Length: 441
Image 1 (cartoon, helix red, strand yellow):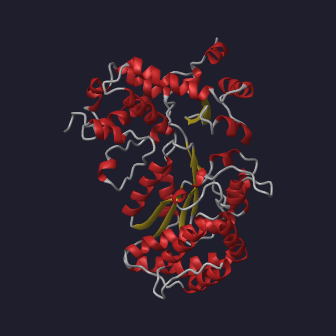
Image 2: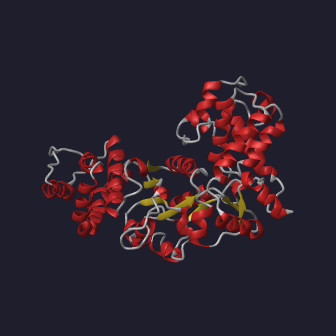
C-alpha cells in the first residue's frame, strides 16, 4: 500500500477536464460509485435494458445531466460493464468529430458510421461500402472536390475524407448537407443494412452478444436558434429524433439537459426515446433539503479526493491520510460541502488549491479559492436572476426551459434526488452571499 503523495500524479489526477477511462487499470483506481447517494442507479438501468430486457432487439436510450457532473465517467463504466457481458461497444465523444455549434442529422449519422466501422475494422470486421462507394463518388462530383479512394478502401476512411474536406469550410459543409438531406433515409438504410446488420451477424459468429454505440457529448450541442425558429437541440432530437432512433443496434445518446425542461418533453420522449424517459444524472447529495450535511454523500466525496492522492491506499486507510492533504479534516469537509456535489466543481476547486500551494492545504488557501469561485458566479447575476434564485431558495424547484437556461446551465442551482423525489438547491458558494443570508434571516 502506497501512502506517500506523488505530487505530479496527484496534480494530473485532479485535472477537471480529464474523463476516467474505466478500461484503464490506473484510471479505475480513482473511480467512486456514487449511485447510492445520487438517488438513482442509472448505469445499472441502462445496462439492464440492453442485457436483460432487450438483448436481441435495437434499443435507443437517452442520458443527460449537468455538464461536469460525471456523465462521461458513468458512460465509460457502462462500456466496461457491457463488454464484460459480451457486447462489442463503440464509445466516442461526438465533440471530437462534430462542430457543436453547427450540426445536422447527416453529420451525426456519418459520424456514427465512421466510428463503428473504424472500431470493427480494428478487430478485422470490414464491410464493403457498396452504397457508400457510389455516394462518395457522387459527393465528390457534387462538391467539385474529388474524394480519392482505392477500391479496397475502408468505409471509415471514406467518411473521414469527406469530413476532412468539409470540416474547415462552412460553405462546403452546407453544400454537403443540401446534397444529403433528401437522401437521409437512404443513408440510414445503408448504415443499417451494409454496416450494422452485417457486422452484428459477424460479431455473433465470434461469440459476441451484439453491438452497442454510446454517443457522448451531444449534450453540448449549442442552444442557438435556427432560421426555422427552432433551437438546434429541438431540431435534432425532437423534429428529427425518429431518424436517430432507427439505427438497428443498441444506442445511448447524451442529450442537452434543457430538453428535460422543454414544453415538448413528451414529444422528445416519444420520438427519440420510444416512449421511455431520459435518464438524468443528478448531483451527489451532500446536503439535505433542510441544509444539513448528508453524511453518506460527504463521506464518498472525501473518498474521491483521497483516492486521487492515494489510489493504492485501502478505503479504510484513506481517512487517516487526511493530514497529508489538509491542515484539518474540516478543511476537506469545507471543500466537499462547497462543491455542491458537482464532481467537476470539486476537482476544479482542488486543482486551484494545487496551483496555490503544495499539500497540506490550509483553510486560508481554500477560502481564497472559494472566494474567487463565488466572485466569478456573481459576475453573471442581475436583479432578474436574484429573483429566480429567491424562488429556488424558498421552493426548491425550477420551472420551465427559460429558468433552466439561466439557473442550471450557469451552475447557480444544482439538481438533487432523495427518497421524496427531485429537488433543486442553490450553489453553496452563492448560499453564503449576504443577499441569500438576508433572505434566510
